[in-house]
Length: 141
Image 1 (cartoon, helix red, strand yellow):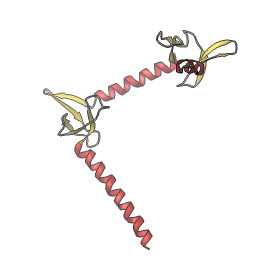
Image 2 (cartoon, rainbow, N blue to C red):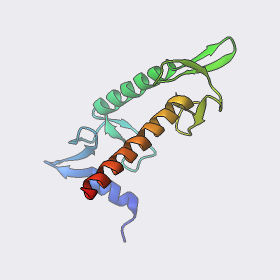
Image 3 (cartoon, rainbow, N blue to C red):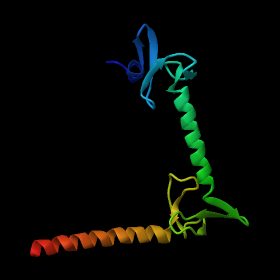
Image 4 (spheres, rainbow, N blue to C red):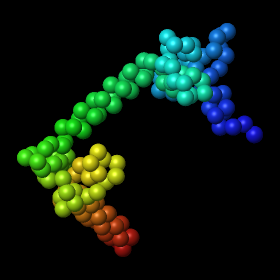
C-alpha cells in the first residue's frame, strides 16, 4: 500500500521532456520544478509550494482584497463595535440581540442582522408554501 504523501507527490511531480516538472492546481500547468517557478517550502515533501509563483501572488492579492472588504463592514462607534448589515445597510451593535452567531465570520456573527435573516427565511417558507399550494391545485384540476 502506497502512503498518501507519496500519492500526492506522484500526482504533482513528473519527469516530462527531460526535466522534473511540478503541477500547479490553480493554473493547471506543468512547470519546471525550480525556484524560478515555485517558492521554497521546506515542510512540503517536494520542497516547493503547492502553487506556482504567479498563482501564489494572484491568490495573495485576492485574499488581501477580501480582507480589506471585510474591514469595511465593522466599525468602532464610541467604544461600541458595530456591524453593517449587508441586506438593509444599517449599522447595528454587534451582539446576540441584533445578529445570529456564525462561526465562519471574523467576529462570530452573521453579516445580516436578525431581522433581515428572519425575513429571508420567512420569504423562503412562503414561496415554498405557495409552490405546494399551486401543485395541489394542479393535481385537483
